[in-house]
Amino acid sequence: MRISSRHPRAASLRTRAHLTREMREGIVAPEGLIAHGRGEAFDYLLGERSSPSARRAEQVAAAWLRAARHPVVSVNGNVAALAANPLARLVRALPTLRTEVNLFHRTPARAAKIAARLRAAGIRSVLGVHPRVRIPNLPSDRALVDRAGIAQADVCLIPLEDGDRTEALRALGIRVISIDLNPLSRTSQQSDLPIVDELTRALEHITRSIRRSKTPAVPGHYRPFDRSRALADATATIERRLRRAMGEAARAPRLERRR
Ligand code: PTJ
Image 1 (cartoon, protein in one colour):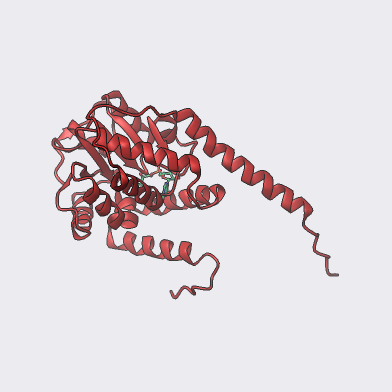
Image 2 (tube, helix red, strand yellow):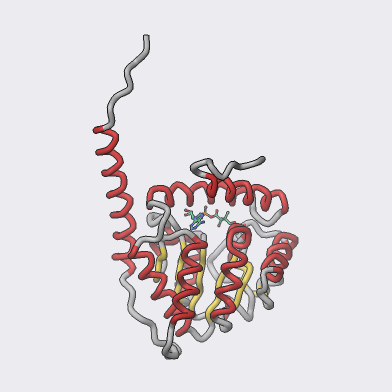
């Protein structure tokens, strides 16, 4: 399908078409399309831009990743399809960051395809294709982790995650940084550092902040972060935008009914 660049939602339509192709290729799970729709709805409510509060969270995330001894980013089908290149730039900016494929709807073939996609983007070492360790008390395949990756992580960046695993990672003492446009999701609510922003924007901001940092990080020293404030800021943004839209709707002239 040809998408006219004059269409007011051309970028959104292109992303949808891309994800649909990636679903047919076996990178994205069918459920990933639904997850994307949910994300888009929240991005719409948040104004489709990174709020000052999200930008602050992204700066602290950069500092935490730099301060970590074993930072790991967890990658699912949607993340590989939407952000393989931004992820590769992040890994180049922070070579200690390990990349691990971790899937909810796991098949060996899908894990291998996603790893190949990440390698093609320039990430040389991709973990999680043959995971041998299980996170305790987690029934889904997301419990399967790599011995050299999440199994020894101290800070884990988890974009588009589910709440159960966020809780399970925290129970292991891992600091969790989430990227999720829904401030009400269990992931955002459970995360140590919830970034309520769109995936590709968030990754670019974290990478930029890492590149700009001048002083070396002190391993194991983490800047404090007010997670409740970050979540309250995001819900306040949504509330403000909805109130404004309701005011505008009330002031708009009614269309005359044709008889
Ligand atoms: O590839 P798999 O098999 O691991 O499956 C991945 C999905 C995404 C299908 C799986 O993790 C899932 O079902 O996720 P959920 O529970 O739907 O959660 C996804 C969350 O990500 C939702 O809260 C969305 O609002 C959010 N989200 C979706 N797209 C984006 C996003 N957040 C930031 N940026 C996005 N582009």
